[in-house]
Structure formats: structure tokens, C-alpha cells
Image 1 (cartoon, rainbow, N blue to C red):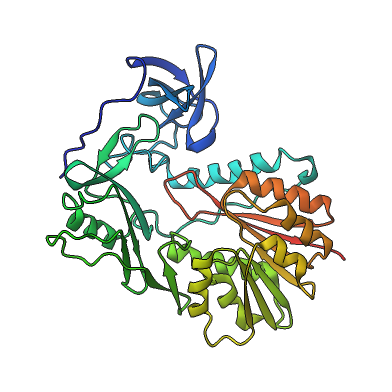
Image 2: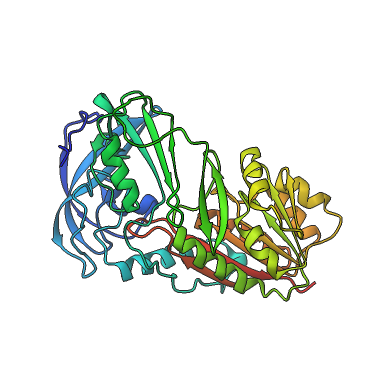
Length: 406
């Protein structure tokens, strides 16, 4: 077991302890409380609890902040459980290990509905119960480690900025944890290290290239292979790929079900990445047009789409390509990054609206913003379905299905 040492705190003042009543969930999976007239983000709490918490004051980019970390629970929530990870709290990568899983699902649905309620155009739109994940631990196929003195791998606490050395992350695939043991204490030639693993193939990628001859595992790969629903995919080091492989397959099936495909549609897959949706939807439609801006992802897609005759891949900005299409699509998948769709993308959609639209989002705030714009443009929201891709954290994926009468 590695000693969980850390750097001195980068806070401005000595620690204070306060008695706090925790109110509702706030940003980053923290609970909110009030302390000395300020709203404080409290790590490790559950709404309704009364706790003792260590106040953490810090400065970043010339601004002062106040957070808190629960040190003792005076009135526990019925949803509180013992966090199984010994690093919980010292490491802030997991925010909700102390909350029972059914309540995690409830809180994620509540977070989505809170964002929907901010927009008058979405009045009456509610979220379905969150789709659970079958794997509550060991589901991540991608790890990013910070490397400190003597090649020690670990994570940095987002509140205190302290480094925490680890010998296991309970969210990571078992193979990644085994590989962590082979790299630990031997990776001093870099400051950041990424491991990506194909849970269905056994292939992997470790970046950067490590020269230490004592490391018994290959590194420096430019890409690795994974399979979804039996189809092989090449994923390059810079390319995005969902971090929960098995739940991604369930997400794809959910998207397919909401598109109501008959086999005769022109489907556009916008923000297509390495081609997961485009490739797996191609057998169900007449033609797929995939749009992707990242050159690295398009290079991967060129391999992933070999032999699929009814699929065209276009490299370019989604907003520009959508606006220039010769024909209006019958169905559209929007799967933008966390910042949501570019305003010009939504304008292009509304100029020639597809009858069916499915929006996949990893951020409830930008999802609700964009749904409101689409509804004002004539769309009706059929359903908003939260999907738990990231158990033990506050992160939530959503699949929203919309229809246009035109």
C-alpha cells in the first residue's frame, strides 16, 4: 500500500471547522450550505444532513473562494453509506461514494430537471428515471494520472490542490489498476500519464512513450482497438471515446429506439467522432452522413467505416456542413461536446428541421439551453432520459428525443 502523502495545502488561512446544515446539491456534486453570509460548496455531504466541516479558503486566478470538506456527520442522511475507497475525500475524483446508489440515480434525475425548469420554453418537460449502470465500480476504460517526484502516480484534489498517490482507483478497469502497479514509481520521466484500455479487446494505449527499461508494459501507442456491439473501432490518442464501454452500448440502443428508424431514412450524425453512432446506425437506414471537425477522429473513422457503402464522412464544422447539405435529413443525432451546440448549428437545424432529432449530452445545463432554442423553433420534446455513465460521481449523460411536425 502506498503512503498517501501530499503536498502542503495551498490555502491562505489555517483550517477552520464549522457546523453546517446542508441544503441542496450544487455544482461539482457538492452540497450547498451557508457560512458567515456566504454560500459554501461542501464536499462529502448529502442534502438534509448536519455536519462538522473543515473550511478551505483558497485563491485561484486572483479570486478568493470558500469550500468545505465534511469531517464529521452529526445528523446522517438515510442515504449515507460507507465509502468503499480509502482515498475518498483525499481524492475528489469520486464525489458520491458516500451516497447509496438508488439515491445517486435520483439526484442525477433531479439535477437534469433543475436545469430544464430554468427555461420557460421547457415548461412541462420532465426527465425520466435515470437509467442505472450495471457496473458500479471498475467501469472506466481511461485514466489520467498526475506524476510527481520519484515517478509516483496519483490525482490532485480539486479543492486543496494536494497530490494524492494511489495504488488503486475503484472506478478504473481492473487491467488499468494492474498496469498502475507496474508503472508506479517508475514514471519519473513525465508529469502526466494516460492509460486507455479496450475492455472488449484487451488492447491498450499508454501515453507518452516511456523509456525506463524497468517498465514491463509497452507504451507510446498512437491508437488502440475496442469493440462496440461486435464492431471494431480504432481510437487514436487524441480522439474522444466514451469512458464506460458497456454502458455506451446501452446508450446506443436507447438512441436507436428514439429515432424510430424504418430503414429508408437519411440520417445525419453530427459531432460524429470516430464514428460509433454512424457505423452502428448504418444498417438501419438508407444513408448516413457523419460530420466531424477533428482531423484525428476523422482519420480513425476512415478505418472504422471501411466496407460500409451507405456512409459518407465529412470533415468540417458541424454548423457549416449542416447548412450546406444538398438534402434535409429525415433524422439527426446531435452529440456535441460539453459546451453544447454552436448557435449556428441550431440555426441550421431549424432552417430545414429533420422530423426526428436525438440530442446526446454530457452537461444538463447546455442541454436545457439548446432544447429551449429547438422548442422555440418548432420542436416538441418527447422525452429526456438521464443515463448513468459514471456511477459514484455527479456526472450524468442525457438522451433527449424531439419531433418536428413539419
